[in-house]
Image (cartoon, rainbow, N blue to C red; front, top):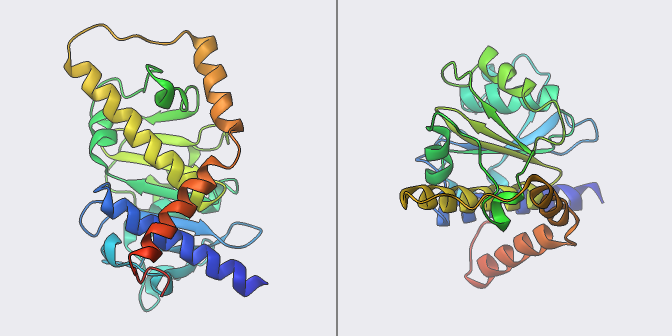
Length: 245
């Protein structure tokens, strides 16, 4: 049973990497996804150092221990920023079982604005109403103390998305399906917002009560994230992808 769970976890995460690359939401061989695989959420899978998202398969994912002080000395050590950011979050936030960080175009444009909050101007952006935090304290690449500092901003489990000022975006979830679904919709919502700003016209911002109602409806929508990932995996399989290899 445990082997089956680990196999599925690796398969889900590999599919998320492949689809993120297809959507060009990745950047070079940077950016990282991680997934806790034990009950204590201390051991987690993450992409290997220097591997392009489009080539990552289930077998490539490396298993790390958030409490292992010798991680960066091991053969095949992860990227230092991956360890700094994801290790820091898994160490501090047990509720953050899956962590996805990218420099996707529209989320990063949002992170570059003086006001990086995402207003509820449509149904997608309402998903993140009162559920995203903005990091205004960028201090350089997410190594060591910078990663630990970022982790403190996710202490409230309600804050599932972090707009990393001057950097990019990070989302957390209970599963790969939930986190990837959130990542996908945040990028879509950020694109809509940026394009709306480009018109120069006034925005149609929802009243707070409607935005909160919509956010709760998103959270209660049955099986949507799971169906999203299931269909993406089905497409990859139909295409003959080796993501599960």
